[in-house]
Image (cartoon, rainbow, N blue to C red; front, side, top):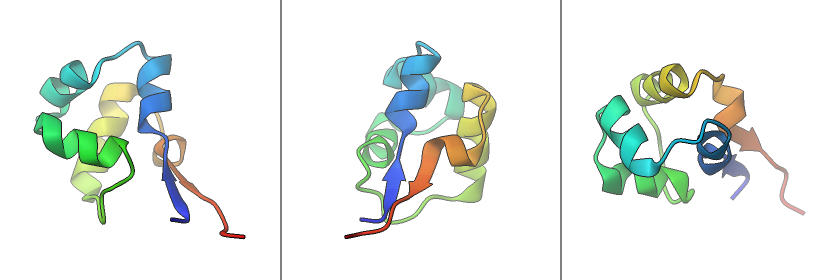
Length: 69
């Protein structure tokens, strides 16, 4: 998949657990886990905005485009 989700990297930098982020963003643990593992097919802008606010980062810090070779 050419879109790489670096949510786990940003969470580690902020020393935040998945449970803590789930509570602060108001997302279920399972939905956040799907996003974190890169298995999500889509993400709402409102969800991305909430994650960026809590982690104090930009969308580009979480999502990355990589060409397939």
